[in-house]
Length: 488
Image 1 (tube, rainbow, N blue to C red):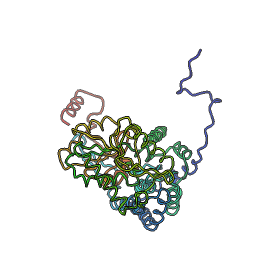
Image 2 (cartoon, rainbow, N blue to C red):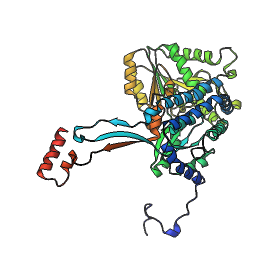
Image 3 (spheres, helix red, strand yellow):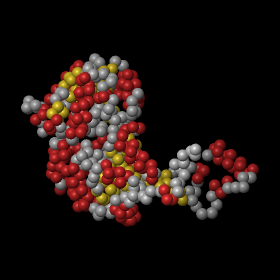
Image 4 (cartoon, one colour):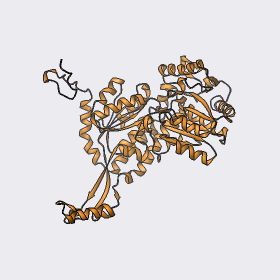
């Protein structure tokens, strides 16, 4: 009996399947043909594209608000803050610094390379794919688009199908502002994403879950293309015994229940010093009431709280809550659910057992487990025993405690006496580490994600120092090499 053929050995020609024509091949080829022109454009042309995008955002502010309201009842003030303002900040920062970012950057020279001149020049990667998520469906499509345009690329955007109103508006944005061989938006579900991932992109920028991120990474490996993965994780928030509890509670409530918890950098669970846990829970309850029930009409009537995006995610979150309660967790605050409107009340859980799914899975919703610790070292041990998070938060007025927590926990980003807001800072690179992501975005980091940094060295013509060490390797040459290794 013969062993099975190696998968690396080609099968007979007659056995080979006819490759399926990719439905997007023609559009991809058009983008590829257009890419050299985009590559050659200078600062003024790229700034002009960014200016058109900025003007469109201002002109369609109400349309953006209405799209998010239709998709999951996102409050208009939250849309302004987290979808429009963040996009405008990215646009202004990128346009302001673009000339500097595009300019060649001189680098120094070592003694061994005297006579040479070296610099780094950036060039666009070419044709790139942006796969954006549903939780911030406008900003997390437009933000990477800004970086990709600034870097001089041709772009395809695949928006999330779970937020159809926003996807339709993004389609209008692209059609209003760009040629289809420069920026193209393609709507659809998994089938469309699968077909797009089969194409040989120069870079893929994906925002979503670690599970889907692995699929994207495997697809990228087929063509060895560049990759940025903005993923998620269980973001810890440590509150020590020195923290200002009211201030901490207000910031935690804002960061956690913004977008009804559907935020990749939201606090996922609290690690609270046991001496202040009861007081913090009371402050959290009071902060929730001030934010979402100031009139006493009930949180469910609040127009400041978004809804869960769809029935599927509502059922998942309701299941996490039920599982925690079944296993003994206490609902200290909230706990009300209403499937008819995908509503889950901001909920604080205490006495949560280690076996509860809410401590094992990324929550991505308005459920907040509270755990306690005695010694600060317990927090680092707990976090580091798990997959690396996208963000960590520290609430403390003790400088040594803050230093310890920042130095002894690994996370993609961090906030000290604040939550979430670091994600909106254009000078800070944002992204994960390990399971929470690959690569960085925003500002200069986003520009570089879509660029190739080409290292260039110019050598003088004629005799050079390195020529003295060319073969044949005579005793004299060997002596020169020995001196080079020893001193230079």
